[in-house]
Length: 137
Image (cartoon, rainbow, N blue to C red):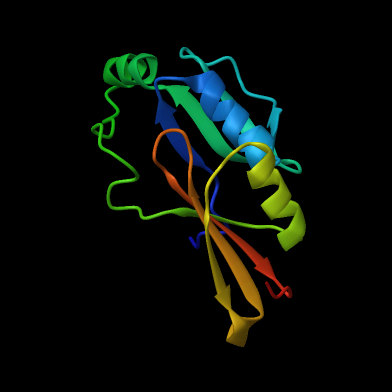
């Protein structure tokens, strides 16, 4: 058996709505279908792919304990996972979106790869990388 793709990432949070708003408003994702699970949350999509699952931390932990599934311990940021990375298609649009929502980002230009990167944090301290290939600063 070989892996075929990364399915999704789960972001546990104390504020599912603020986290949803960040991924939808700042990064341009959208809420999509989610099965009826036993804990509050959202699935946010890029196109038709559910990339980020957002769940209420306490409800998810309770549900997982009943199911015998270990839950990550609370920590600042992403623990041993450094960041989640996405691609975007426009440096100007990304800059404008970040400015519109007052999100501060570090911008990194990699001329040899014709790449501009934005590094920012979601409301839970999860580091996000947004790569725009084929575009110089």
